[in-house]
Length: 458
Image 1 (spheres, helix red, strand yellow):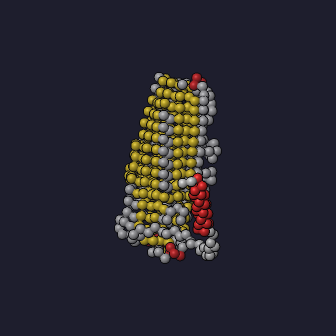
Image 2 (spheres, helix red, strand yellow):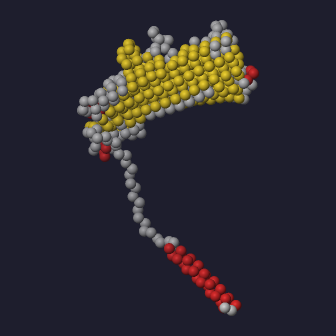
Image 3 (tube, helix red, strand yellow):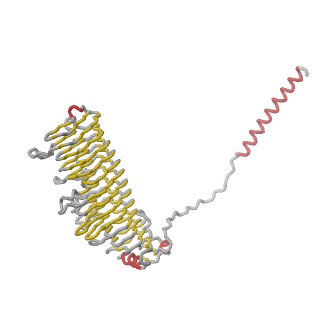
């Protein structure tokens, strides 16, 4: 092949490549051309929420339920004394079983609603079903056993009263008794009067903007035992205010005059309550002293409690007010007015990996407390003291961290009690193993009337 022939074939190849490229561009332009589409009006499809109706359930519609929902109802309320239709439906269930479903809307109630044994009363959720209660002491009552209650919002003067056993309360939001004279102990109230109340579970319940305790447990007579109670993913927010007659309101008040034998509090929140976030009375206010055992709190948060309360005789205003036979693990306190964790008259209490940030007294233990152990706990930014101990014995702070306290001197206070310089409050046979960060360890401890204590402050 000659040189001219080779050049000619090279030119032909170039031409072929150019032709192919042009064809490719034309094909792409044709397949991606804009074709005007006919304009079709878009019809808005209404979003509807379908009521959950278990098989065999009796259905009650509110006066303001939607027309579509009213078509499903077995009973129709008219917005006046709606407890009548609800109670009729509960009474029509088979003995010891069955479910009544409340549809979306507001039910206006002026008297008690009492669940029979083994029955269930369910709304469509706190955002759709509301029970508004008026009148004096008109609770929703679980006085019998094996009942389930849930799925609504409770307003005005409504509350849940549990005096029976093996009951479940779930997914209820209560905003109640916001001001004035109040007659209920709590928005969610467990009461053992001359009986044992056991195996009661509250799950995903919220008390918010109430003038009473969010959650309360109490008892009277004999027996007055509350046993194996569970609070899981529950919240008490802004319970208590200056306009309510309940001046000692807390978020969760678990132990007053009742005997408390078995309690689990898991992932619960207490926020901005009038007095304590989580509260246990030491039991000495009644004779004989109340009993307690097997108290467990885990992964709870208590913050900003007591901050709205400026009354001069207020006392608690703390994140956790704890007494006896309790184990707290991974619990958090933030910015509580008085104490983060306050053990008062305590015995056999253990804190594991608990932290406080910004409370006045992060960890306080006193008033004849004994056998209290703190493992791997942390105080950060305490505005007064990281450790405040008086009238205590056999207290152990193991691997405790004191981080950037506001006071360089006295952020660990032993044997002193605020407001009383005359009496003695000895601290004896205790261990304080503390690592300091952001403060000179040489000056953090002040002490008096102390004996046989081991201090390792570094």
